[in-house]
Amino acid sequence: MILESLLAYAHIMAFLMLATFMTSETALCRVEWTNAAVLRRLVRVNVLSLVSGLLVLLTGLARSIWGVKGVGWYWSQPLLHTKISLLVVMLVLLWLAARRYRGWLRTLEADGSLPPAEALRRTRLLVMWAAHLMGVVVLLAVFLARGVGTR
Image 1 (spheres, rainbow, N blue to C red):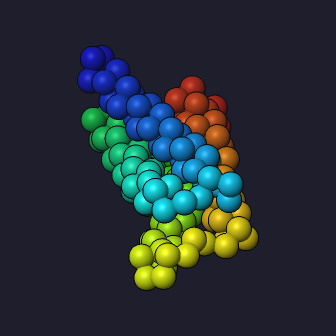
Image 2 (image 1 turned 45 degrees about the vertical axis):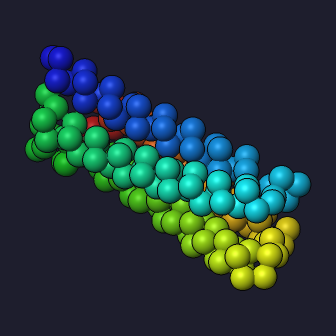
Image 3 (image 1 turned 180 degrees about the vertical axis):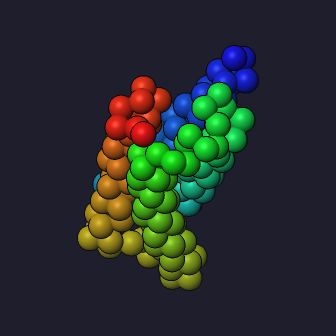
């Protein structure tokens, strides 16, 4: 039972890390706060968001392999597949934001210009959509843990 508890703890902590870094990313991606230092920090925080998302996937996989319910039970659940699919969508949105941040950083280093306000707004929306999807992923996780909608 200690292993199951540690696996659940690691999975929850990975989600909290992801929430923290996505929140930081959303807060930093504002027109009124944008400067060279913030742009560099956005790149670093986005990497942490992506790493945290990967940790969510890995700790979830660990729970399915070494957890009490086992691989057979977890992988037969449609909720798990929905949860993983939404998490992948979240990571794709964060990856798209990462590409934009890196492009902005290259432009900054080349000619010293910052991204336009509309580009910042659109990129911030990507991260916010990812953050809002996480609320659905966590709800599905709670349903899965409690046996709601499972086979």
